Amino acid sequence: MVSAASAWEIATKFRIGKLPGCEAVATDVAGHIRRQGFEELAIGVADAGRAGRLPGPYRDPFDRMLAAQSLARDLVLISADRVFDHYNVDRLW
Image (tube, rainbow, N blue to C red; front, side, top):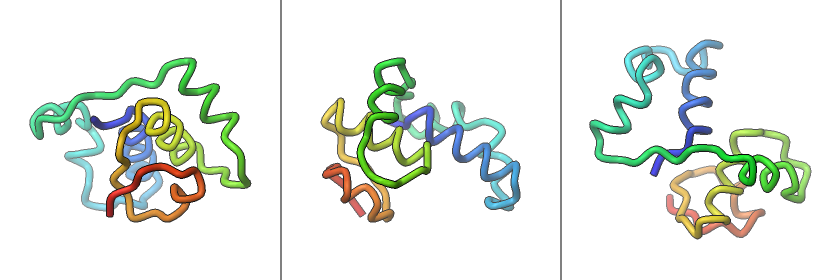
């Protein structure tokens, strides 16, 4: 599964110049998700509320959403970012 938050983050980072050379992915994230055999994970109102209520000083809305969705659905999150360990998310990588 690939969260809509990841698509949002990829497009945003490409737009502001933090992902140079990623135009093909940034302009068609959904297509890349499908072609790789992944399933889209939409963001719902419950996800938004859960992300907003997560404790801690971490302000990155993308990370908060990924943590909230992972916890709610008992999913393993693939990320090298150790901030997720604060939320007790099962993390791979």
